[in-house]
Amino acid sequence: MTGESPGIRVNSRLNSLDVLRVGSVGLRARRLRAALSALGISLGIGAIVGVLSISASSQADLLAQLDRLGTNLLTVGPGQALGGGNASLPATAPGMIRRVGPVQQVSATGIVADATARRTDKIPRFLTGGVSVRASDVNLVQTLGGTVGHGVFLNSATGQYPAAVLGRSTADYLGIVDLRQGVQIYVGDQWFTIVGILDRLTLAPELDRSILVGYPAAEKYLHFDGHYSVIYLRTDPEQVADVESVLARTANPAHPEQVDVSRPSDVLTARAAAKGAYTTLFIALGSVALLVGGVGIANVMFISVLERRSEIGLRRALGATKFHVGLQFLTESLLLSAVGGGLGVVLGGAATLVYAIGNHSNVVIPSLAISVGLTAALLVGALAGLYPAMRAARFSPAEALRTV
Image 1 (cartoon, one colour):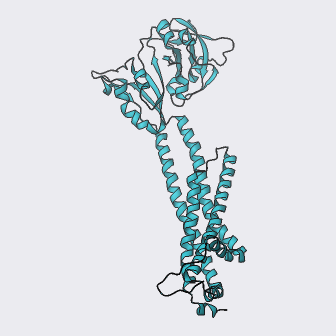
Image 2 (cartoon, one colour):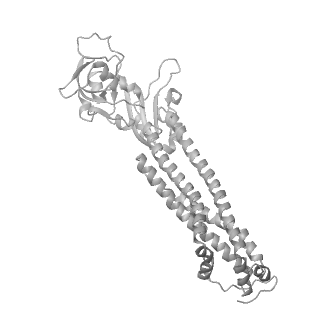
Image 3 (cartoon, one colour):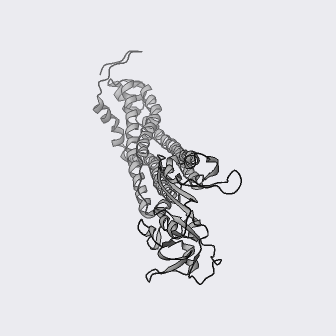
């Protein structure tokens, strides 16, 4: 190597492979210390990757549960008319709502006025037990995310005939628990065959106390007037607010003020809060990991520089420049942090896997967590090794060799 003149940078003869080889000398010579230092930073990076991945896995399960509870469910109903009393929704309302781009599913029900449901025709009409009769679309259960506990729901065929589905509370009130023998109830002035019993509908509890019949059957046998009471719709979860803002004008363009539209449920707020907590957690853990890892590596590298003054003096006496010496220790710090970062990513992924298996949830390891974890490790290594590298580069050959 050539010498150096004040103020003039000497071209280094170290290629990339030489830099890695020289930078790894200290790690190979002090393997236990290097392993412990790498373990320290790996725990910090592992905390970032692990907690972010566990949070992402938990959040994915949480948001799926919230979606099933109806974060993307809206309801449209008639409001108050200008002259008092209840308004009515136009017959075209469901079809118009289906044309809104983000809307995924639409289903409507309508209360059949003056229709009563009784166990037999011997029971007086006024003993209804609060059970209402509703005309229903055949896709109501799918829209509400409900399930049928017994039998089946209405379809395009049974919806045209005197067939009915009971809400859970209605079935309990009427004492109907088994449909295998064929069960009929008296609705209006017509016997209807029960084809199904719904499980409880968390999103539409009013239907638990109802009897559902198909629209064609309601019009034919119960003189249904065709007015919709409630329109249920599912929309894109990310565009609930946008869809909500246009529903009134879409359902009743002539009188949007006479339309009541449900606001996004409280669980939608919980969804946003979950996303905010995710970001806050990421920032907090990243800061702590950077602080702990940086202090640990800086301490190890500073001690290493003091212990290896004789090595530095010998290299400087043989012609190594200040740049060579500084680059050696900076590379050593980066290698140490890179090994620790890689190990941290593995530890974080393993912790996420164990958590997911224990909680029967999906494994979600965000690519952002991996890239940020590795980048943070290298950044910590660079910052932590910068001052020790500069300290090593400032040793003159004579001063360093005096410690031999």
